[in-house]
Image (cartoon, rainbow, N blue to C red; front, side):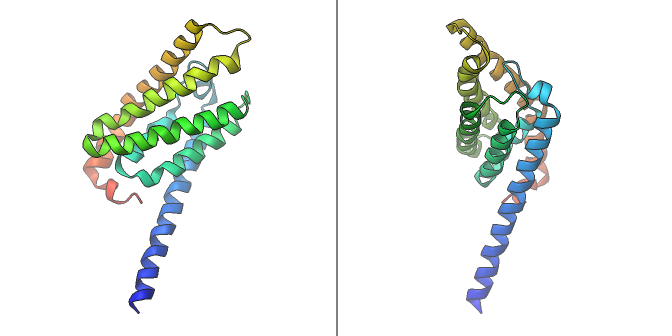
Length: 175
């Protein structure tokens, strides 16, 4: 009897994990795709990146964000190929891991890793995918514009989301 109750709890936890990550991935994809003009390119402000605050409260939300990013880059209208698909997803995973670690100590500082990760990784490779010739100044500028767009989204949308999740007890609902 105790074994079946234990198994039921594990199953419930797994279902919760799959559902929450599926919703996060779907929302990330929809927001990115339908706001494509501001979601892709050297100057971008992915509204979906506001959800990168989820790992501050639960590292188990990282897979949903990673899948959302991967699919969003797969369906990018400009189709930048495997470097963008893998690089953007890797940036999201790295940001999620560091947000989870930093967020345990200070939830407000948990928004910094996505800014740094996307600025350096995505901003570092985008010029090589978008331009025929690339200078170090263009790489640096793209790193700064990607980081600035990420920071803007996380300050305007991410910080209020952190406040709501933290104050309402929603953090206890995440897997």
